[in-house]
Image (cartoon, rainbow, N blue to C red; front, side):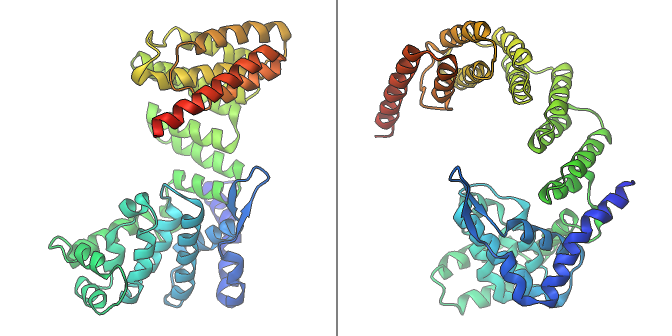
Length: 377
């Protein structure tokens, strides 16, 4: 099957979802933000996947009569971010905002302001020009006539001399290139992310692997490929890519230690505790002598990974040897309340069945918690 055929297959369901939303506005409730909690207590949005599907189809099929649907989707994304995304900004919010902004309606200023005003990251990343696509003068007039409590703040932001209609038009052109209306203009990397969002793991792997093969195998490209494969659950392939990263990298000593640490983590997650431990032994040779200061974080992550490998070691004798080494590495590392290093130590002690070690790590965790509270105070 060609990439074009696979792209067409992936778009069938989103297009059906969009057609249903257009024909039956009473089904929009299926696209709404609906909070749920997993068994682990993590918050999720039950409508997220359906909303993503319709929004993606709208990117490639833009019609004037869709403004009401687009506004609804943007409001749901705003609610999703407010409720479940304390930091960060992804293309779900920016695509919804751009598609609304393309309609150039001054009355959408406050909707865009709501999106921009969610968090520190959206304040920086959701561009002010979303508010100005109906014309800078029209936006200023609309805000001045408003009684919105943020009227003064927005006026101060949009009346700067550098905000011109030409600058807004240039920004719109940049967004059109970022979110093309023709599916054929999307990069293979973008298709990989779209497929992942639809739960199509194999298709996502296919597109991202092809994207990485289309250019030089630089460390940055390989890191992107490795991260994506690991997120999809293709851990054996991610291990191979990380080994390639290490082979091509000319990173300094401590950065190479981090690369090896990443390899060890992937090997453990892939179920290979023996290879993971050998990688960690190699990593130890590159670790800085000083465990304090700016290097403490690297040490915490290294020791946490050592303990996690211990907790996945089936052989009793190997478990005891690796536990003793990990315990020795732990000594002298400051701020043990950070990076969940003691949680990993406790898991290793429990796997070993060592009550004395369990008591000692529990005491260390209590001491670390008090240290954290004192630091905050």
